Amino acid sequence: MDIRAYLQALRAHWLLAVLLTALGVATATTYSMSQTPVYRSDVQLFVSISSADAGAADLSQGNMFTQQRVKSYADIVDSPTVTNAVIKSLHLPYTADELAKQITAESPLNTVLLNIAVTDPSPKQARDIANAVASQVSKFIAAIETPKGGKSSPIKATVTKSASLPTAPVSPKTSLNLALGVLIGLAAGVGLAVLRHRLDNTIRGRREVAEVAGVAVVGEIADDPKTVERPLIIDEPTGPRAEEFRRLRTNIRFLSIDERIDSFVVTGSVPAEGKSTVAANIAIALAQSGETVVLIDGDLRKPMVATLFGLPGGVGLTSVLLGDVPIEAAMQHWRPDLPLYVVTSGPTPPNPSELLGTRRLADLVRGLVAKGVIVIFDSSPLVPVTDAAVLARATDGALVVTRVGSTKTDQLETSIEALQHVDARILGVVANRVKRKKRRSYEGYFTAPSNDRAGVSAAKAAQAVMAPHDAGPASADTVEPPQRRATSYRRSGTSNGVGKHVNQR
Image 1 (cartoon, rainbow, N blue to C red):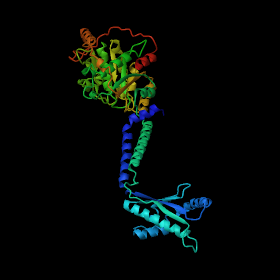
Image 2: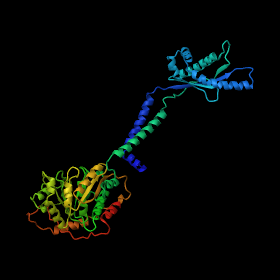
Image 3: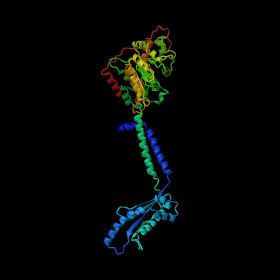
Image 4: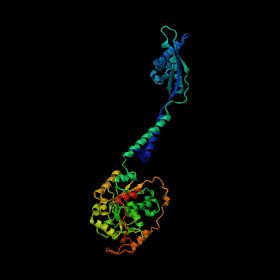
């Protein structure tokens, strides 16, 4: 992993790193508070040889001798002879072994100094023990260095620095413990964040969508909390979300060079990716540009189009495919200012896949395209059922919607494979619910369309050429789609190249 991958892991799982760092600090604080404070007191002895008539050579030899001997004295400071004497003199509640663990001694290199340190929960007792140990060590050295039959020892240990009352405990080291807690917690947090990032197969961005799907990302729709209350861009035509769908509309037009995209299905991998909302808003965006659009709810299992547009769903696609009504009777003109017609799903059939795979549906699509309309299907997700793959064969291709931060890589791969297995054309992937990093400086540049003049003109043209059909009188909500004016869509370049170029822009 490079530094960018680590930063992505921390950005995706920063809360985990923060929680583990806080846990490390809390653990260090709890440990420090649970420990009994321990105080330390130091005392120093100077070991020398006493010889009144010694010359310079004798003094030098004596100093070398003392340096060698003082190393041995450091090892007998905590001997039972010394500790028992200290315990008896101070009436301490310790055994000789317990007191020995509280005493340390060392002799600096090339010196005749003996440094003794004593630790104890009581600062006063630490001082008293240190002074008592120094006194007993001096006596012990004098006793063991006195020659047999002699009256005094030639070696003398003199206290040069008496023990003082310690003012602060040496343990626990709260500041050090907190620093270690922060470092350990942060390291654990970062490590787990990176591990979780590597093991997590959730799609996290547009680049990953393109890598997993192996096709161009033709649109990117930002996550907007207002989508739940106002899912259709007609309710907020001047916002950045509406502009994103207009950009997606442009990209769809540029997907083909020699032939235009007259019909396609909008699907996804799993439920709750926003495919129905994306399909509805693509239809609105195309209608706003003057195209005559028929949006058909091909999700015969959990239909959403009627709910999104607030239309009755009693008569719909199922009714048409079963031969109960012609397509013109099932089409509902949504708004008078837009050439957008909606066909709901109709009654729920027991065999959606078989119904959608009939020749009647293919003929339906061809008939509508021949009349000059763009046909858009909203369909079921591809992982649980094959409805969308069946529809994709009857149209010019499929747009696959994937929800960034929710859809798994294996789910998207399965969807792409499902379409490839039936030789369906994959028009591209729409990355939905992408997190906006920050407010863009040019968001104030968005302006509303000029009253959707193209849409109003096309809607009036549709009503002007509307003709009666064989199914009898249509309701006020049903119309026959008009013949769309011929438009040339020939462009230079290759299909994949144009699509990628538009997406990169």
